[in-house]
Length: 146
View (cartoon, rainbow, N blue to C red):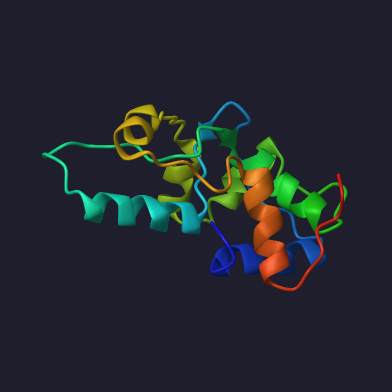
């Protein structure tokens, strides 16, 4: 996510129109990483190509999609963004692709401790709260103080 995200821009429009969104289950958590933090991590990797290893690069602040988007809505000044209620999930499947449903069903968290230790990397945006506010400022919008 970040100011380059066309999806975030679409949510701005959806919130302005009071359209509900499919928030998924609150227990399903994911790690969020600002695009500029992803870019700096990739630069670190290219500076010193490691052995064939897999690294997790995350902000280490997992959250549900609903919490992420609700916070974004509040930064925009939307008090209570509407969620598609659980009883409406069957109907939501007619407008949400199978891939999107699969993503919302996932609950994965990771730690980037090894990458941080080996590459001396720290995210500029330690959580999505700071990162979403940055995206709004990049668009020339003032985030609502929470």
